[in-house]
Image (cartoon, rainbow, N blue to C red; front, side, top):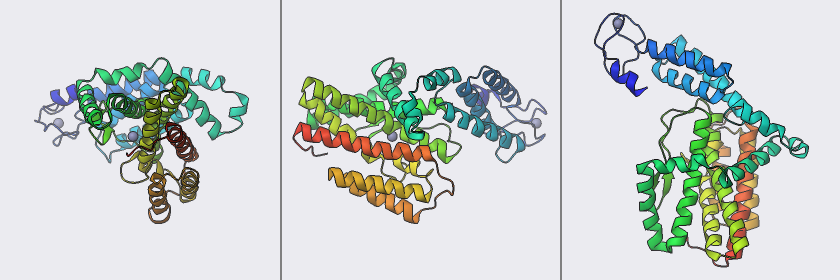
Length: 352
Ligand SMILES: [Zn+2]
Ligand SMILES: [Zn+2]
């Protein structure tokens, strides 16, 4: 896409000189990136024919960036992006081949639980993914900016809590961020590699915007889902080895992910809440209240206040999204349980 933007300085239709960000020639109204758009459309059609939904989605999204908003072409391509995004969502994986085999293996008992069963089944895949072929996990590490900012963050945590804790905490933040990256890739969106901000966490910058609240919620909650899976694994490892440091890491990682579920601003929880109807938001409030009651963790009071505010006072869509609610409630309960268990097991409360 960058190469196309750099080359197109003269209109291929009338020869007028074009500004770098123009999408339409002001003289003859020709689309500046007509040729790239043709190529992208052909790629997208070919990918669709092969049932490579993520690839098709990626090509259409790139095309969307090259089309002026408000035109009929823009609207048409947007409709395709939305339709494909929903298909990817249902498929639950990058290609239909993957997802069919994944769903085929799903036990009947889980299938009977509906959206909750699918969420559990997916959580299993997240665990397997983290344990096994985490190719994507290594990918982010090849970026110099990620690695450098990661080491810087590690240094900050190291001086505060020692090296084992520093390495563990940074690793769990990294897994959380790669959850976002995996979801972005699944929906064919371009993004930066994770950047660490010492003392605060890390972030992934989006280069393309989600097309609707549902997509935004999937990408937003993918971070805590992966981060939660990492916290569970860390706690299991702590139990298996009896190593208290691992327990402390699991504890900190769980609360860090809970904090990200705060349904405000650009935090992951805020992005999830945008897709929830008012009624669904009250269910989330109930789950957070329950988690607070059971764990007495003051962080949940913050979430409770945020969620109540969003349920009462901010605009909500008429039609909600069950899967987002299941993911959010599941995260609150799983993270609450792991955080609390790890805290009890470690025996010492951490000053976070
Ligand atoms: Zn022209
Ligand atoms: Zn996040």
